Image 1 (spheres, one colour):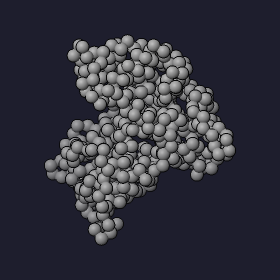
Image 2 (spheres, helix red, strand yellow; image 1 turned 90 degrees about the vertical axis):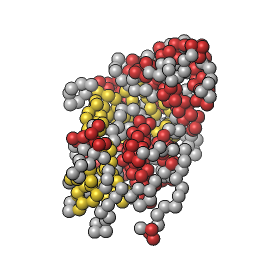
Image 3 (cartoon, one colour; image 1 turned 135 degrees about the horizontal axis):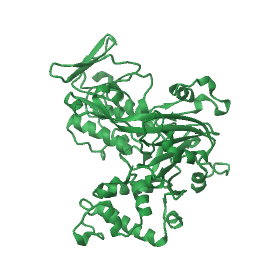
Image 4 (cartoon, one colour; image 1 turned 180 degrees about the vertical axis):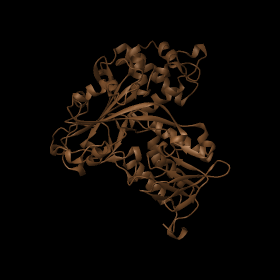
Length: 471
């Protein structure tokens, strides 16, 4: 500890995914970073826990774990249930800082949508689209015409659509206007907006279509990358993601300290942050990055999200049955455990969607005889436990057989405006969505506000890392 430098370009508090991304970006782009976490493990809210740790996290006695749940070492349980779009910003962020080699990924078996009480697979191939019962043949043709324009527009902004004769473009016309121009039904609008564009609610219908079109294009690009579904997921859980970014930052000279509670945030006479104190030590930096838990007076709640972690007896039957058939070396069918189901708000009489996901032994996160199931969504009640609002999601998991449920609600916290004026950059809480696009967008926004630099994720940082002699 006596050799710890006293001055840094930035101090990062918390080792969650967003903080890890910002720390890695600043390190590979030449900043001197000190990264601290009060916990004795990496990941914060994005950590992956062993089963005994999960019981303790929810205030339950690990000695009560049933024997049929297997060995503790066979479990890797995410606190935040999310998949990775294979052509999304998180994948390109991992590539940009050159840390893909720290991770192994597996495909998610399929993406599904809940419609009229039935779970339908989101088509990943032409054959699946033709076989899908989500819409009729003529409706599929109309949707295909819209998608042809969306793809063309991304490559050629002067491409023509059914609204071009009115002088409208995706920057000026709403999604509803485009959907109506292509004579799409309400159920098709819902499918496109929620199952493909991954919108949380229906507000997008009344906004310019440009951003939603980009989301659709991203989804289709991700679908074409590996097939089956647009999503991938790390072997052994999401907890390896923040650790991978931490390793990169350390290679580039970042200093990491776990199990280190911060006792005081230090400010200068101008009201701006100047450093921190932990134990008997004081270090200085002109700015601090951190998760909301480190700055309770500088964040405000914008809502609440409920998240359930369930131990299941198997996968969701409808999802497994609709997944592609894969066989092991002995010719036996492999049971698919990784799926995502989106329940659009209008289908379940809610203000916003519910997200259901499962994963298990296919990605080495559970013993063979168990599957992890997750339910997440915004909750609006004033009770301390509003899980009844997510009943539609639980009902889907019940089909797989729920052996144990853990449930918790989290405030959706955002930084107050005055935080940046103090040179404090606070990440937003993780939302209810089933993917990481908004997570990475927040991290990129923080980095660009901190540095004033525009980040180009199409590049890969390959310069020589510091050596011992350089230190």
